[in-house]
Amino acid sequence: FNVKMEGVFFNSITSLGGTAKYVAMVYLGGSLYYMGVKGIFKRPSVLSIVAVKLIAFPLLVYLVLNATGWFDPSVVMSLVILSAIPVMNNTAVLARVEGSDHEYASTAIFVTTILFMVTMPLVMYLITLF
Image (cartoon, rainbow, N blue to C red; front, side, top):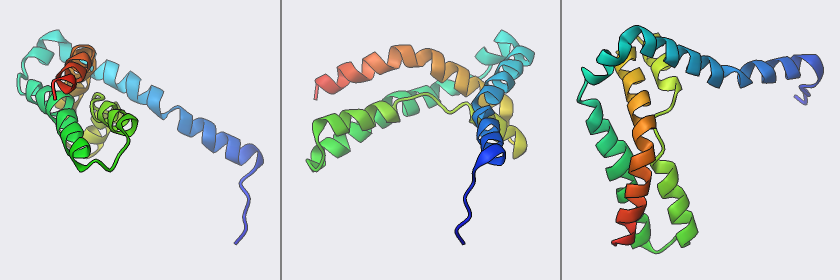
């Protein structure tokens, strides 16, 4: 079939889809508000997510891709940066929908986003040592 999505319907669906990231941010903010600042520090296991997701995984990506020699250094560094970004915002929403621990997911998003400002320069520094 050659159906073209044009006009009001297509623009409406596109606009609605564009609001998803903002709705996820509102949900995350509300979740953190009801959990409180003390709730964030009650979960020290979130720091293991920081260690693995923001430090170990990007270093592993660098070592593996650099060892193969198949990729241009700029591609390797781009993939390292992409692998070092914080946890996605919609993780908390998905955890809530699936009946999982959405407060833990909200904490992980918050902590990884804040500590990203420290871990990204650290990862780049550690890469220069290899």
